[in-house]
Length: 174
Ligand code: HEC
Image (cartoon, rainbow, N blue to C red):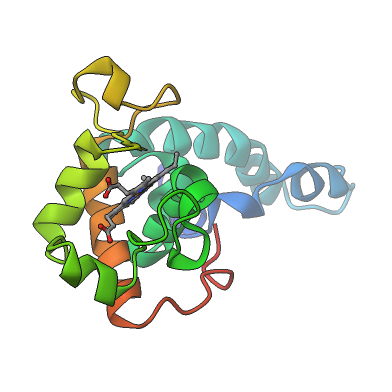
């Protein structure tokens, strides 16, 4: 009987978003006398189970913080983190002729996803590169580097946004 209910509880909790097991959820329900023993037991199991799930998730998923978002949302999140300082709204505050709008990308012959990837990885002119193996150092960001997969998401995201004329990215949750 016990193993069955444990399996059931595990499946149930694993389908919930990580957020739902927050402090309130756990603390709100102080053990009440009428609570059936088994439910109490499952509840006491929830935090360690969630901890185990969160700990294991990098094995099969990308980092937990980005793991539950779509590629576009992840791209938007990365863009807000690493690019928006110079490219807010798809513009370019340093070099006005090199925005991320399709017209500029095409004129500068960098409108293919491959080219977007390369520029983001190695940088170009006064744009720093973000790739883990970006060289030379002076051409690369002093901030945190991005993983190859993240740069791919960014290239896809920039391409998508350029094709759509850079609609607001505020609505993409992070
Ligand atoms: C410190 C400011 C800065 C940051 C941060 C920055 N860029 Fe740039 N970006 C530039 C500059 C300057 C250029 C123009 C480079 C050139 O053509 O010489 C540029 C050019 C580009 C281009 C080519 C645009 C064109 O029309 O030729 C792409 C694509 C691009 N950046 C993507 C990104 C992405 C993606 C990020 C975030 C990972 C990012 N940039 C972060 C400054 C920046």
